[in-house]
Length: 296
Image (cartoon, rainbow, N blue to C red; front, side):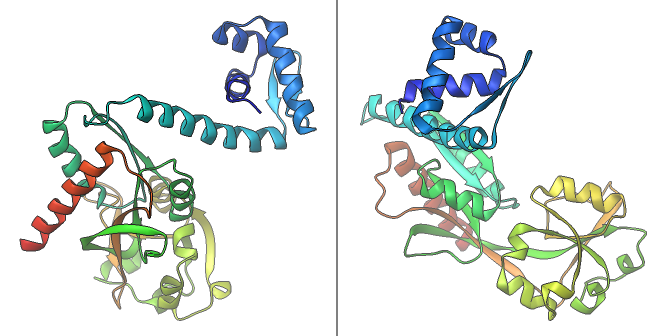
């Protein structure tokens, strides 16, 4: 399996057409078709369904596309890092982050560094904790901004002196909106919209004082903006972190949990991983920033 052929495969998957992909790659159509057939023969699996006007991926093709994107991305990053002068602070820093208002602290550190180092580029990718850890472990991210408990056997980390507060997004005209906080009992018989992160968090589920199977979970989400729209449409009550949705000019309000339930957060990176000069500078700047916040 050659990297070059994986790039051909990704081009065809993206264009969904052999002719357009061949033009993009500056190859002849027969050459590209032969490379794809050889790739399918190598794996012993059909990767494409070839229609008259459009090529679509099979289930095996979809799996390969995900892996090929990771492999090609990692190869390109490695090549770029190896070609950089070792004594200069330039290049790309990839940060995976959960949906949290704490991203503003990352942004402030980025702002400071860009004033000093013009050659730095930052790439922020959102996701839930499961996806972020998987990509962090594969080397696709330099850092992760993670919520909750950190596995210190796998990761180095800088803890932020802040906590995110759990609560509920609901319509302002809902009868419960007149309260200042929300208790577990108030939600036991209500239609709930939960994130995968919440469902996988034992402490979060413990707060309900009731088994998950007995809760009325009507939907799940991984992006809070989509969940907030469901709340506006009166589909259910969204369990979410505070400050992610600005409710002042919307139909929604946010009520914190009572008893309070919060999550700590940390910037993490893989243990024993050789960092680029740019990543080292970012760690130093982020550590300095968090110490300043603690002194305030």
